[in-house]
Figure 1 (cartoon, rainbow, N blue to C red):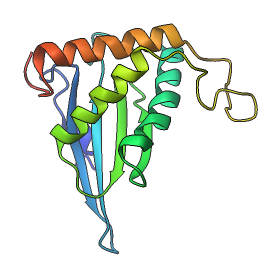
Figure 2: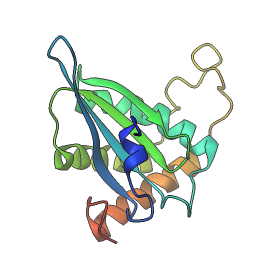
Figure 3: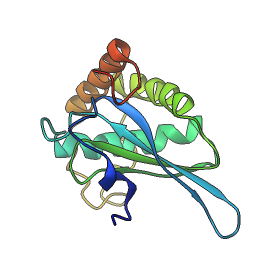
Figure 4: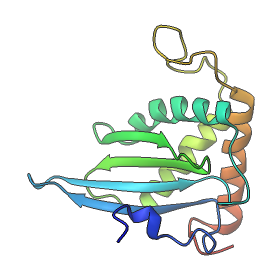
Amino acid sequence: MDKVPSFNLDHDKVRAPYVRLCDRIETPHGDLITKFDIRFTQPNVAYLDSAAMHTIEHIVAELSRDYWPGEVVDFSPMGCKTGFYLTLLGEHSTMGVAAKMEAILKRLASWDQPIPGATRRTCGNWQFHDLEKAKAAARAWVEGIGKKGYDPFIA
């Protein structure tokens, strides 16, 4: 009955952090779109700080285009504040996306530049950022992945 694939995921069985292919759509014109769940925190247990999420969104949206040139459709926060969705054009494997996300988040963890797009002209809430908490969340994701791997069902 649920039309949204993530509504069919048992959020009590997954173990964050992880990367999961959550949707694969072929458009009427034959284009392929793949959507990935980039989970940072354990659902229904821990949540990302809102200002940190905003900062992660800005930096990853910028960096992701270095890793998937011409293929990034969107990098957007989950309303539940436990992670993000990465939507890409074309066929992409979970392992390939996970490896690139790990590289991106390692870069974010040591970010020492201005936050991309965080000016009054370029952002609708430009003062609502927290770089230090974003860096801490990126480090936690990388460390968690290092301990358990990318699989959503392995603790």
